[in-house]
Image (tube, rainbow, N blue to C red; front, top):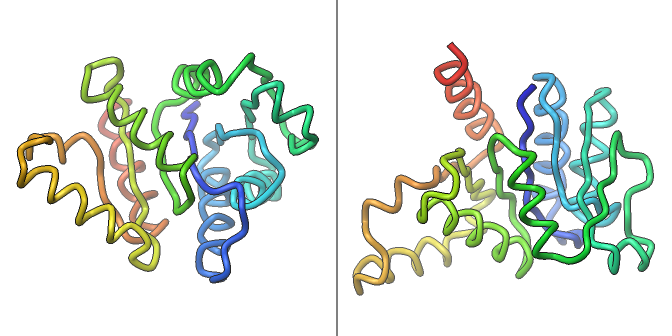
Amino acid sequence: MNKICVYCGSRTPHQSIFSQSADQLGKEIAKRSWDVVFGGGKIGMMGRVADAALSQNGQVIGVIPTALKLEEIAHTGLSELIETQNMHTRKAKMEELSHAFVVLPGGFGTLDEFFEILTWRQLGFHNKPIILVDIDGYFSGLKQFIQRAIDEDYVRKSNLKLFHWVSTVEESMTYLDEYFQINTD
């Protein structure tokens, strides 16, 4: 059973295309009989991904620090909710459980999770696919930053191969379908 970790915002964005993408991703993961692993919240894009997967009878595993659970933002309708001591152990547990990572638009927390899992791959701590879904050009500024970092030699150009950049949820699913087909034969 493949488990897909989804990093995304804990807030609801203004433009509906982002919420629709969260719904679509949750449903597409569940339709493939893959599990969703996510931050355990019932709010924002996180809640939408979870609810969409659950609406398709998908399995959804939330990983949430005690402090956030106590703030009553934990999604109580999940297949499984794992409580961790803090954010550091949360991120480690999410990595341990997951076979791949999909990053949707979000804020500081989403970028923190993306860069940490990317850094872990760069350092050889895992070799799992990471897909950044650039819905409606949301990450165009990030793309400029990464190019500048390459131009200034802070980042090796070869490190672009550590993650896959797509524009739609469909492209992310096609990439994962192909990846799992190749890596399960």
